[in-house]
Length: 252
Image (cartoon, rainbow, N blue to C red; front, side, top):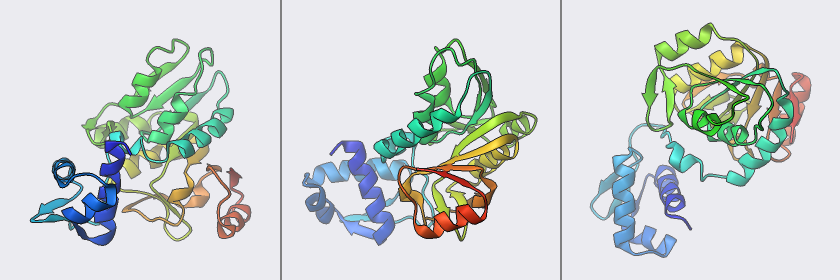
């Protein structure tokens, strides 16, 4: 297991259980307690947990936003499957929004030369992925840089995007449920995603199967706001029924 994967799992275990001993984590991951202590120190610095004598405990806040560096190692196969399906919806001579999600990054990596696209994004990582592609016009919203996700957020970014329109928007979600709709951890991220969806003719939501029935802090919109939902495998029957009733196209 890679160190970044181990730290992600530790953060998830602490978040789920409320706390755990260093010795238990050492046994769980078959590494020394010194290694676990280093991991916990890094996770505390990044704001995922609080170290205490003999272990770590969950922070009092209800939601933790994982950094891009950690998120890109989470379910990469699922993201690649989704990206392979999503790229078929990107034709030449068109304009698209790409949010700052790691799933959108996976999609950006599949954009070939010669498509003559206009890509509007709030993601530094996506700009770097596409920077050498001369056939793509790249537009960034600017704003306050959110270091955890490498994305521009806040009023400046929102005001800029409100005046920009695209043919398609590709956005991802941290939570996807019939009860709460499409949700993410950060209210500022939710606001940017909502603007991208509202300002596009075709709204495409990219969501891997682990996000179904999850609810995060901030709502982006109801599921039926999407025109197309792309995931990596067949969703539960309750979702299939909902998609059919609300004329949402599901791709899996």
